[in-house]
Length: 399
Image 1 (tube, rainbow, N blue to C red):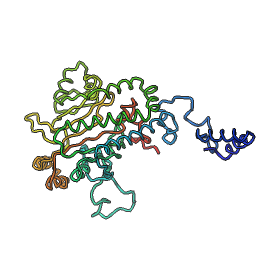
Image 2: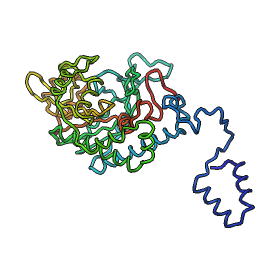
Image 3: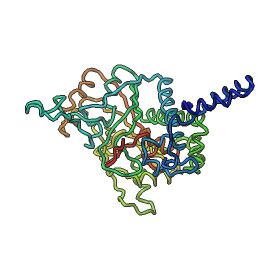
Image 4: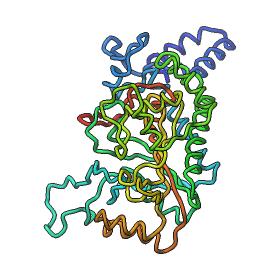
């Protein structure tokens, strides 16, 4: 939009032209947007120079201005199209969208990395009522348990919203606030069903984004990650690889590479392990299934498979990132669930979860995908802090 001063100048220039030519010029300016600052701009002081390709780390210092940068502008358009494509994928496949709560009294992951909710009111509440909600409340780490509630009424449900982890990490793939895509499927007794939805979601959304935002994607694949275009072509063309946790451990133990964390059965996969497994399998996404029972949360289904004792869990690992998605079959058998919650001392806290089984349940399962990690992967962006408009991480909450 033209400012008042420049607008009048443009009109004065047009007045001296023949009428037909004047109308054409005005229409062209309108069609092109003719964006000019409405007020004074101190060009020399503006930190983002038009003809410079600033590193993303530099642009990150200016959260209030960085959307004016070409790279971030492209990222935000891609992010918008990817969001729409995710909703379309689920709606086209019969899923009901559920708004799960941001404030919750449950720790779905069980890792304890929670932001607790407290009031800012200086006036202290009476001793008998120490919490605003009468119970400790936290910012959600996942909408999964609430989706399981809804899966008792709808066959397929999904949610897509902000989640929070109080993880004191400065790594390139962790944020304190990020967006999670989560789905729950009723009447499934197979991890293959869940893996198929994960793979279809990834390929459908990625193909849609590439077709809707070719120039924006090309900017990243040309200037940020030149080799990523070919890698993704390979990913979209081929089936994802499936290996068991046992197979993963054998691969890692036989590796010539020396790991910082020694791979041992019963230990979780570290980022270095995940990246090696992806490389070993040909730099394509890899599903790792059937993790040790004691390694995973209480809600994952017991495989009842003898001395090793595993659960029907799955992680999707992708090149350059590591874990992108995590999911499992849920334990729908009441005696199994009661026994595990009792051993963990969680029976009282999750009595409502037991009720879901008491009052009629079906075999079901689901998964979650980190949206920012997804964008990191398809665009080849080094840091997760550069694929979200306003990054939140430890010791940083700008704006």
